[in-house]
Image 1 (tube, rainbow, N blue to C red):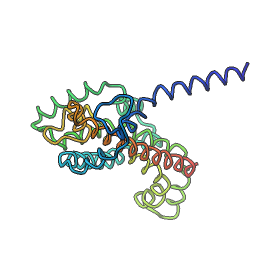
Image 2 (cartoon, rainbow, N blue to C red):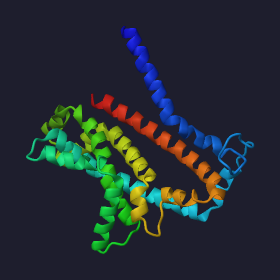
Image 3 (cartoon, rainbow, N blue to C red):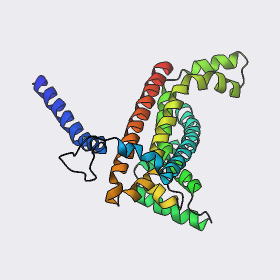
Image 4 (tube, helix red, strand yellow):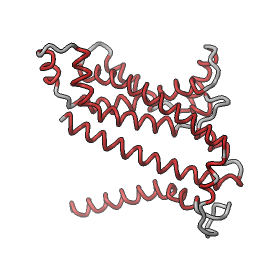
Length: 263
């Protein structure tokens, strides 16, 4: 009976993964198609769509915008998440549960609601849509991921290490810099990679808040409306898919390394 139940769960998991990821696999498949129509049968194998990516100045600028937004978002969100996670794990204070719930709230609020609300807020404050407003919105969305990752890094951290540093005459800042940060550094790297990926792939907030400085997802959306430009978009999407998978695998490696180190 147990064997039958295990086989059923394994089959269900396999079918679920196929249903979830099979459509994604068609993206790189059609990016090598020599025709402009996304349909079977394929007309031939070609790499020309990848070669044309470097000739699009607007694409390069959009990519540069996304790298700026993703990098700044990752640093700011991880920095805020580092200190927030330390406070949640180490200290008991009034309103801690409420505060942690508010930090995690962006995970359950529809993105369209957040984007439209932020657009109205920024315009009322005199801030026009730009990369700066996109960064502010992305920090809000990426912060829950940073806090979750850093909490896992601090959960198994041995506080006696810091106490030993205090007994040896080290200051609070010195202990944090020389003892705490090196131990949780894999968690920090993991948080940087995950928050960068979240920001780099985000579309709704960027669409509302970027103005005339589109990020890469906004640029891709503007291209898929034209059938002639669809093959280039498929090639670009394939490269982004590969980069996202590589970043997430790297982040998971550092997260597990952080758990082993703190344990």
